[in-house]
Image (cartoon, rainbow, N blue to C red):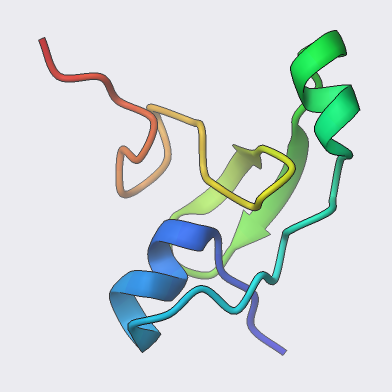
Length: 68
């Protein structure tokens, strides 16, 4: 089954299906700065937070990029 990060899920299905939510806990993400390495069908290999949000500025969709 295809899995998508939060942003790709919203882009494709107009809602977040939570495919990667819980890969790491909120505590691990906030206190230890841990992220989950996943394969999103929309943006490729990427890192996600506890909610499944793509954090990687180098993913195929550049989700984590902060525009200056």
